Image (spheres, rainbow, N blue to C red):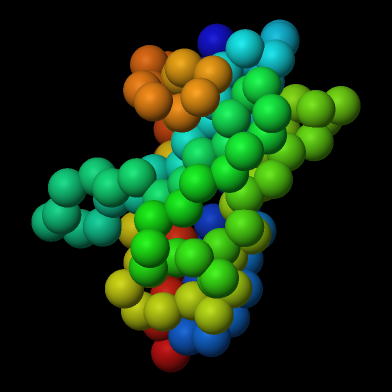
Length: 118
């Protein structure tokens, strides 16, 4: 299982970004894909996940209504659409593959930096 996150960058508060997580092989058929972030000096936190079986999606409370997770099986890619970005969303974002229902995560890719600043 291989994962590669991309799409980070510098954005102003209130702006939007779309992150991509490209996976390998049949990862999306068997693994839920989660997004995580780690801000400077803080522990890594879970943001969202999309399950492999029925495509159920899950979000942490402070991103609900602002972030949307989706997947394109043909492109083997999971997206994280982020809008109404806040200063506190600044972090390194990474994706992870794990159990089909998003209960645990076993494989990690390198992250992409998102900086929200005016």
